[in-house]
Image (tube, rainbow, N blue to C red; front, side):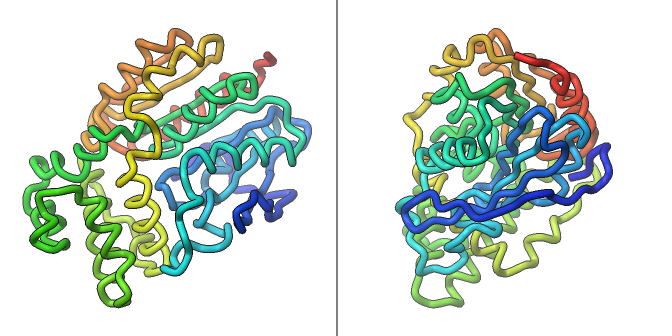
Length: 320
């Protein structure tokens, strides 16, 4: 991801004990007296890369970034198959955001989220609307059961060869069932070779189903075996449980966002996360503005980062 602003370094960082034996890594950068904002990365499991910092005007924002439970620099790291994921759910992550807000002495903050981070941002804002000043969400998804089925099965109509390879990665008895669940079981196998192959196959499909725009290049981050494992474990963990959310809850709960300004940015070529997801959300959330980018797919390319920066710039001077 690239942004308009130059690279910056954090002025503070730490590890926050959020309970359950979990330590969450956080950092703050920009202006200590600026408008507070928190970044919710995607995945789940991708961690918060330094490039996120460049989306914010460092003179006007106090930016808080953190690695969600089990990934990035947070501990224990879910790449270790012995790490229990039972206390890694959406409810736990929402509570972690609140603990971090309180720890840093923030009253209200802007929430920026992408992909899975948009699901998490919506869940957090609907449960704690008084703590959210604005929302900027891009590549918007709500992680419903239908969305998980769409990505793991229906996208095979777009990439049939790659999907057949993805489906063939699980035992024959599991190929017509829940593929996220089947892969999660493989990633828990006692044989490290089985786990590694499952992580490779899962991440190969992840890199394929977003490849809907001209010039797509494979993401080099999937070459890292540690990243592959933590990413595959956490994504399958969340997807097999449909985001640990009652199905359709985030759309039904959109009314709780009344009065919170929002910008929803989405690519028209985002087939793995179809544009009707943010469209339906914008219809149910009167204070949200939906912007569809003709040349963009899923992620920050093809003008997406520039539109995110523009939205953040627009909100930078707003006091609510």
